Image 1: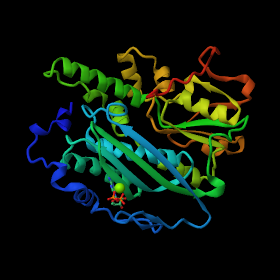
Image 2: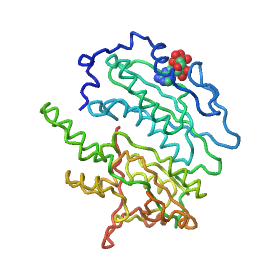
Image 3: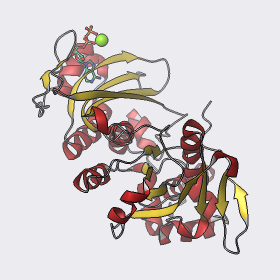
Image 4: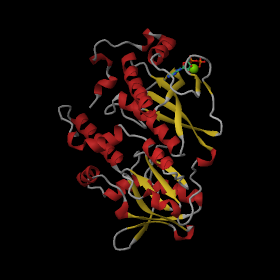
Length: 352
Ligand code: ADP
Ligand code: MG
């Protein structure tokens, strides 16, 4: 448990933000960033950032806002991981359009309980993600909040106009694929929540998360599938439709099917579930299939490809063929062993 995240008194040498002031703080947090991309003409330091779009490309823009107490809990989320995850979830949306993210802006609202050192940790995570995904931090905004921390990140990317992939273009007969494995982030969250309430009941409790490192890491430090977008480009495959799995596979399948006016048939036995995720689902007495279908925050990619591209994907590690796109009249169904089928339902993450 990271109760010290929000407990200034117990840490030595903590600097209140007021000691630096708004401009001092922004300078302190952002002075080490060097722009990498020729498209980033001007970053932090003027009234607006300036970008030079690449000829022939279209620009992709996506924003997400994360609110303390709604989207994250600083009791078990290290600020460095939070910074990293805040960036990654935005990049995931750009990859889900088959684009390459190049820049981000970061806006934060913070209460006075956050110190300069806490914000350094947050920006450490932000910069680590920028380095690993080759992203320029080009601006943002900083303001105060009455309570808690709010982070809003905008990601900007680009793609060839004819290679942008939408949700509404899946065709009957296409094959459905999902990357990586599902349900881990949801079970990681269940475990962290359980350990938090045990700790609150008795602060001497030692958290039992060591043997569940995989699902916990899926929750706290997810990755966006840059690698898959590169593989698809390499193999000259443009998916017919694509979406990232942030709210759960069922919910994302229903988005693609509704917007494309098609149905789908997916097979329970084909759903990729990591053995460590499976083991934790047993501990919580939750059906692993339900966690895979309705758990959120895996940030994998769900995509459809035309039958002519199906062969090209065979044998690629980390991509599971889960079913097919069918006519809308056939519905959106999960087939389980024995041939029985169930309608997919969108549970997703209901924050609102
Ligand atoms: P303005 O008053 O024009 O909004 P600011 O003083 O808010 O300008 O910001 C000064 C510069 O610092 C701008 O380039 C802005 O994009 C950048 N900036 C402000 N806050 C952040 C932040 N939290 N992270 C990164 N860049 C920031
Ligand atoms: Mg401003």
